[in-house]
Image (cartoon, rainbow, N blue to C red; front, side, top):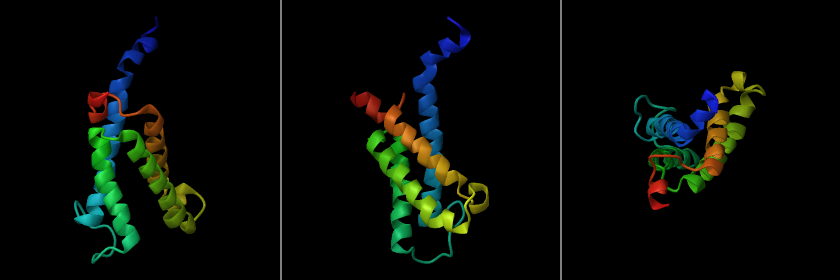
Length: 130
């Protein structure tokens, strides 16, 4: 068995690290909209309804992904949210993601889509209930 094949034993832990770091970064987008922390996102004042829904999905969904609770269905919803966000907010600013600043939306979309298929990995509420 080669050294790289031995790494397969650590796959659930690598998956957990991907899930946890992604969730922490994603939650921050929600806190910027809801609590203006660490910086405000937008123009301040009350959030428009669609932005409020996005902020709640980012914050609450991010927390669920962080602890690995209902990972697959939550990740499915968040992947869809990021696809919608990309096409509604970024594509109108230009075709290329580097131009329209949509790289993170695309990356979140596909990381969450991966979690739909891979599950939560180690250190998750989902694993405890399995």
